[in-house]
Length: 122
Ligand SMILES: [Zn+2]
Image (cartoon, rainbow, N blue to C red):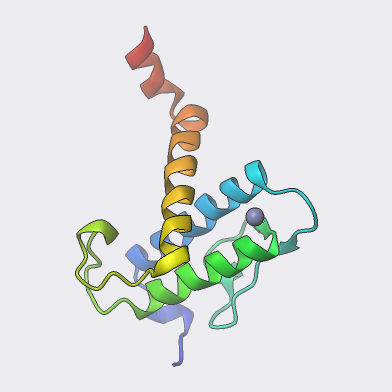
């Protein structure tokens, strides 16, 4: 598999950034201990996301798996994962990515979209 920067669509780049951001938030809020800057062997992640994300070994594995699966997605445009017939996340990874998406989704609403919360609570 050869992947060059020019082969990524904007949608793919968005998905890659989102995955990185979500796993990054989850790891930061849940895991202590040694973390290393994430790198991906199939392409230079810095071409897509300038901001570095440091992860524990477990989250590094999860993000690597997620990015690999995103790259291998046979659908274009990619459907919502839960509506997809391919179901590329298996077993443990599926449960973990779900937990990450749920936690970080709520986290981002709480921390980033104050304008929306304001609307709901006031
Ligand atoms: Zn972690």
